[in-house]
Image (tube, rainbow, N blue to C red; front, side, top):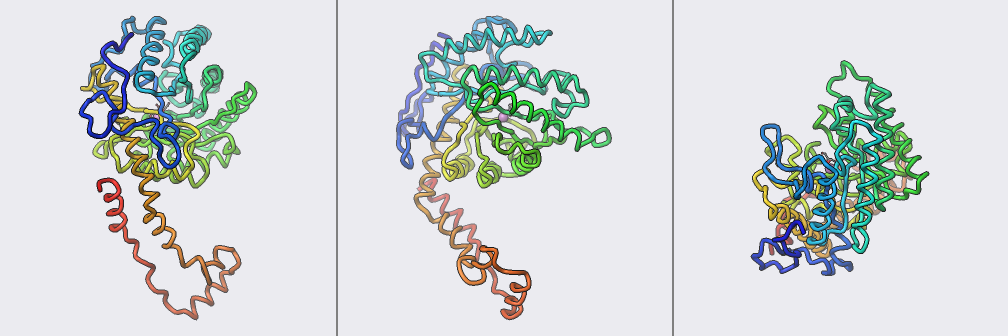
Length: 436
Ligand code: XUL
Ligand code: CO
């Protein structure tokens, strides 16, 4: 056992003062006709939970993530598997997400890296047996190694493009081997630093080519899940092509990839794009492309991707509102989040996930209440009542012409002001649902 002093985390209810217990996440509790756990397929992010130890731009690690083995070795890679499975089992988490290089130390020779990935994925498969833990999604890290300084699909080097293809192939093989439901493209360096040296159209077409090669290969080896784009506007690049959900969806449609891809929406990426989390979820939902969520939150006072554990119940309630309206996720909620640097103990690893899971449970409960209450949905419905009959109904049916509408307007004279937006009343309803 690696986390000897940590018990299995149980639901103790809202009054509990035990830091190592759930206050709101009660997996069997029925919410809108389904057990909570079905609405909330949580996933552990291999990289943050088992890898990130607090290093930032100004200082080194604060946490010890060696798990009793020497870092950079296959023993350490296996110790991370042991730690990860014990961690997930103690919290009741059923999924994990990984990058290829989260699993094993990358070797100088890709053939050796691939051999290590095979060995480690065999070990993960063994660990999975007798548990109900599965892979949510896999991905290839095509942003850390210096070769990817100009991106992978967007690189000016065809050799780098091929190397990316090799990594994607292996990551897809491994995702399929581990029964993964999805495969993610996060284009961290798929963008530019300056247009002075950039052929934007060529780079975007090439990214689409790489995705098309990946889809064709994935389908040929029996991968039936969804591919995801995880939009992010910037960081590390000054401008990233998958800026936000609207941009990514238009890109997928332009290149005929929209049948194979959905969105993986990360809260902190949406806010970096100048949107709310809910906005990017809504854009994905109304386009039938809400697939999965990277569950975290940013800091509105900071302009970068802080990847904090979700705590903002307003934001998460509106997330769950979108998810319920979408009929649930085909993917899950991956905690792409890290404990703050001064929260460096083993207890902090668990308490971070407890916070995140409890926040989403609260968000689910409150979003269900908001929908059952019905005032907000009814208000929105009524707000467009002028399109239900008369000239409005004709507009919606596409049976009018511009000349007919103009004639209608000229006869009418100036229209009355539209009905009040009542934002403050609606915000009061949300507060009442959250706190009454
Ligand atoms: C980076 C980020 C990534 C992706 C996977 O901002 O979110 O960890 O989720 O590459
Ligand atoms: Co992410």
